[in-house]
Image 1 (tube, one colour):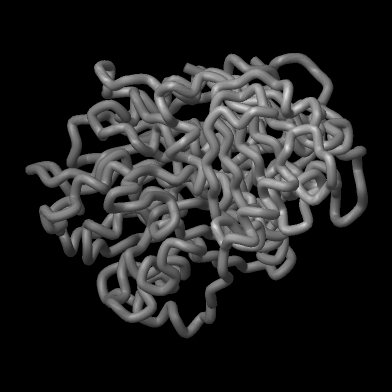
Image 2 (cartoon, helix red, strand yellow):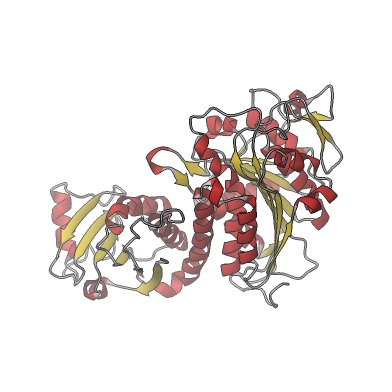
Amino acid sequence: MTISLELKTLHCDSVASEKADLLIVLLAKESASATASGDACGLAELVQQAEKSKDFDRSKPGDTLALYRFAPVAARRVLLVAAGQASPADVRKAVQAATAVLRHEQVKKAVVWLDVAEPTEATVSALVLALQNATYSYSATRPSSKALGLQKIILGVPDKAGVQAAFQTAQGIGAGVELAREWGNRPANHATPTELAEVARSLAKNPRISATILGLDDITRLKMGAFLAVAQGSVQPPQFIELNYQGADKDEAPVVLVGKGVTFDTGGISIKPAAGMDEMKFDMCGAASVLGVFQALAQLQPVINVVGLIPATENMPSGTAIKPGDVVTSMSGQTIEILNTDAEGRLILCDALSYADRFKPRAVVDIATLTGACVIALGGVRSGLYANNDELAQALLQAGEQAQDWGWRMPLDDDYASGLKSNFADVANVAGREAGSVTAAKFLQRFVGEWPWAHLDIAGTAWKSGKDKGATGRPVGLLTTWLLGLATQTDGVVKKKAGKTAKGKKAD
């Protein structure tokens, strides 16, 4: 069930009369109403007494105080949550602290009131995305699971007009994140390459989006030998998915996004250990993030052209699978010695990067759960960012900061490529354990044309393990925020006013 999220102008008196199962009050350190005398919702005195008794502290984001049938308020339950400085990070922590109460089965309608004088657009964006994250429920393969009771959330702010645009943008990004999480979470037998292609076709029902699906014969005709080498071990037919969003003039160069779509990675003949192999269903999270970005584009309709490329396949061990030592020829004509069949992501991406050249792109960004080495280097906080262009790298990093979907720039020195030398081919697909994430990026760089290019290694950020196991939807926020920024600029010159949408009919 889709949860309705409504933005509404609310002040202390109107909050008190808002009927709901739950009222969550996000109290900043310098909150507007909780410090006022004679406030209509009766919070000021209560908060002051709670803080005096050290039962609550607004300066500590995530600190909570629960109330039941608080007389001045119409809502049955009230939860006070400290929001610190009301920064995006503090608001995220506050919502995380309220998640369990928000998801209570008896809560069907909730009001979330941000009690600050003038919330920033960044704070409202963070709040919307945090609420969407908190209320997401995976149920695709759990038909007997109990659905979330929540049906509607009213987000109250002092003046909705000032943050309406940020609210709508965040909703669009949130829809993209949710789609990426949903498909990232699906088990491999419910997210085959063919099923990913169906998602692309469904996205193409939106205005200005079209989809082209290339099957085995098409991929063979294109001489994508590296992609085919990975696919040949599986009974599932490979799919090469091309999505096009045309929000600007046809002659404007597009941005190309390339997502790794290994729907399940056993490692092939270089098979992985059994422990944790189930998590290799997440190896298509790069592809899921591209699909998620197109979901956001469909909703937000920015003035920009974007192409999404997804090589989708399984990596399986079988009598037809590639073997360590095999040599294959990529679409670019370069030959590759496959020393490790578990380094398959770069093989399917290299052909997709060669294919991207036909669009004469403005920039290309590939997104992949590529290396365990990146997880060791950066953990689950920041995605590894590699780029051959400083301006592109900086723009992506800034978009990540804005979206709280952070990246960290990694080196691309030519010396790192020395380990990729092969006696039997133009290049080997691995270069040993040292700087494994860097050498993987250096491998990909060989297949990049003259255009600005960036590589996002999301192996540490695309999903979580343990009790919170599941896809995160990253880096949909980073990518969409970056694209929305580009939509207003051409080579640094403002092109259209922010918020203006593209004109034109639905693409074929």
